[in-house]
Length: 289
Ligand SMILES: [Fe+2]
Image 1 (cartoon, protein in one colour):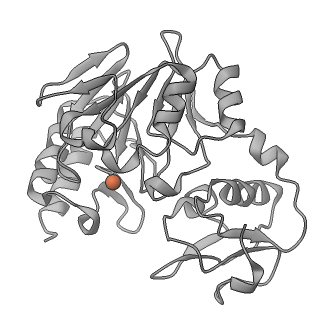
Image 2 (tube, protein in one colour):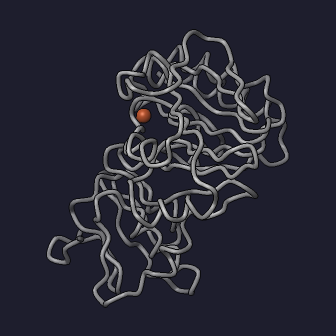
């Protein structure tokens, strides 16, 4: 529960506030960019919601916040916002909300498909999401991009009796995973292509879904301040040079039109062919040391 006595001074006056327990994961800024901004160290409310859409988005941020650092001064009914999760982003792809502290607030996704539903990384294990996933046919596979973002995957795997996939080099975070990918080759499972993309961590992998949706974990995301895609140098834990090579590998997947990361901003590829998007990202990454 957020505490108004701890609210940060940058918040503008009004119902919503962020308190000093914020870990600056950025989830609120992605769910409600019209209301939440950032300082060097944490998020704050820079504009109170002005429209019903903004209000709903701010409520979603409150529910998604992994540290319960967002509060409201007035009693606020969050039920409709709760019911809106998982929130459909493109047909068949949903963002779960309820980001987990254990994954430093990474976004996670649910993919609904007739051959079996997938989770990409894990949200908090909540009663609401369990029921929502059950209503959509359950979960068959949990794809774990890397060791940082496993969160409550084990609880979901137990509940749904589903398989978890992780790379051997990151499997220390989920040693009992049912499928441990080894080596560097692509793995094909149903509509999913799993691509080995070391750099952020040793065993990072991304999931390409039906050739067009790239679930990129902490490997690659939209960079709004730079207005192009790329990776985060400051949170590259293993090797920046190898991460650049791993981004370059994605150039062959010409039909990618959406990128759904764990941390960082989701982004639509737009009119530019994806190989050009990769060239632009790699050229920039090579200038960053
Ligand atoms: Fe990470």
